[in-house]
Length: 132
Image (tube, helix red, strand yellow):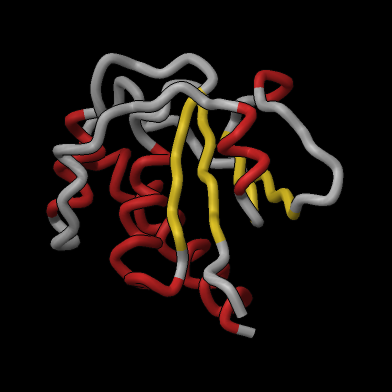
């Protein structure tokens, strides 16, 4: 089987989608291709999200928010949206999941840790599902 591609999307591509991509990259290695993007990308990744992931030994500090493109959605096997509503494109035939998660923007580390931990739980479940 070919390597599945997972695309994580949130509005600013600065918190939730970056944390999810960081976890999936960390846990799956080269078994899954990981993309993340935002419909209105921020200038940089949320510093509190970076700190929360660093506590888990995962460095997302060098990541840069990316603008969501139609081609990214078309090449993905799984598209996971996080609070982008109608701003995210939809293509028939793709596997879609919408993860309802609090936005870490403007939150302190104490508020971001439970979001991070829920993202990890969902990424682990997704990885187990992809592995069959």
